[in-house]
Length: 101
Image 1 (cartoon, rainbow, N blue to C red):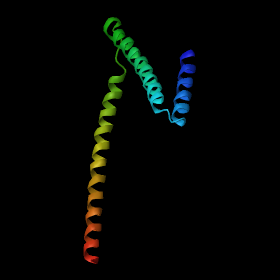
Image 2: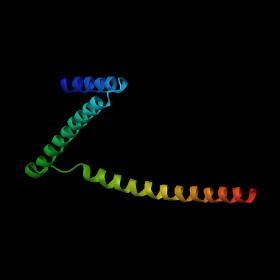
Image 3: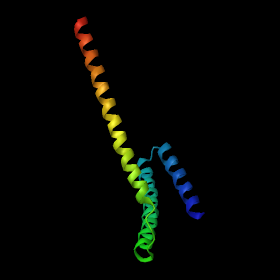
Image 4: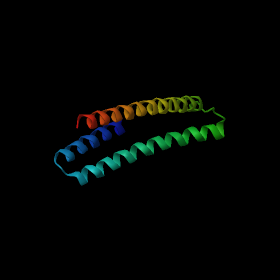
């Protein structure tokens, strides 16, 4: 609970510094907050990997990672289709502008 309170205070300080246009202090507070979050996540991963290696625990995220990878491939395919549609529209607009001149 103490960590949550510290995080809330650090973000309040971040906003206060940004509003006061003290960007150097805001950047320092942001960097510290992000570093703390990254360290927490890394510690959780270390515990999970140690459990897998030494206790024979199974990796639950393997299935999730595979599904996420498939979603990314699907998302990229959709994006390419959208991009090509936008390009066609831009070309049509350019042609209509040239005709008007």
